[in-house]
Image (cartoon, rainbow, N blue to C red):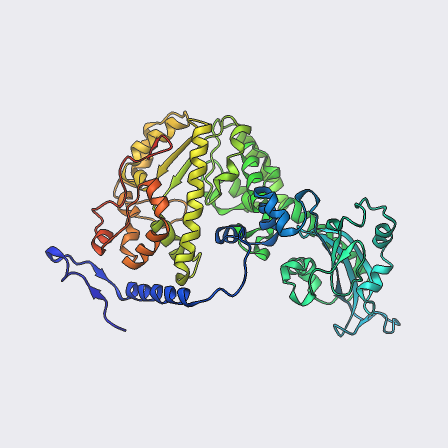
Length: 522
């Protein structure tokens, strides 16, 4: 590997700024990635409403469609060929549940396709992966169409007693898998071989309730009852505790019910209604670092499980109701979700904390591995589009609800922690004390040894720590971020870098002081 390029000989006064070999390798990787991107031809057609930002934020089909229904009903009708008010997608399919061959059953339970003995689960599910109608009495040798012909749902559909619109309104039909006959209430929009795992509801359920992926050694009746219990638990989990699904359905941000769950969690904590808050939030490790929730965290450690949480909730609720101010730190929540709550909660105030996009992106790469480095430009575009959207929402809230939202730059807070603390306490109409001033000073300016605890940071000099990212990023990487975040820089007063000296000289600021945004000085 080639030696790192030393800039000490090139810069005035013998400055010893060094571009390391690692940074050079990153720059080379960026250049190669850009060449491939220019060379690569587009290989698929994508709906114009399905932007990179939408895919990154919502990820899954259900959530994308729900967002489109809300934002642009006309585009939704054009895309789905049906109006919003009539769209109600369902799917019908069967799943073999493996069992041990029952005594004296012959070949009744034998399934040739799977080469095993099984009962058949035939189910109708909705677009949110919830079961609507199930039959677990099918025998392994029977096809889906055979079972459906004896399915009590079929009789209700054919006699028109299920409450569906007339047959000509095909928007209310169910999507059947390959074995289903076409009827006025059943369509086959795709072949089964093109379905993904997320489009097959029983695979999602089986991935959560792993017992369904093994063989039942009990009688068929026991296997039927157990499967039906899992279906009830699956539906309950989707409705009541969507956050507990994330280990199986992807990251928290891509959870199907993320937006609904996020708002329910916020309102549950604001109203001290913790029985409406998901289990992950009630047991997260951050609670051990807060003076007000530390005892609750100790309680659930002593009393593990759901019953333990129920035991500990009354004390947490009593503590919450005794406080005048209820504050929450929310990371990467789109502000458009909170904006409608400003009218519902007249006392709600928002502190919008922003940071230099270069620092945020590097931190998310180094500490959280949110994206591969060769996808830096793509991720930056999505990230800054999201920040820009939040800033537009902040400006709208500032116009509609003056004095109830405050924008603060992270770098300004790091440079003047005591002054910003005074402003924040004044913003929420709270009294600041000498003890609090000392607490802030000890953790930002006292010169104490730095700590790396996620929730209990102590910095010997907060301003230096806030700019430390500039020593770990190369010029080309910084300029790649600059190219995608120009609108955000203009609004927040951040400066693009032109030379290595601009980037590495920590005595020079990369922000404009006292810039105005929506009538606020940031």
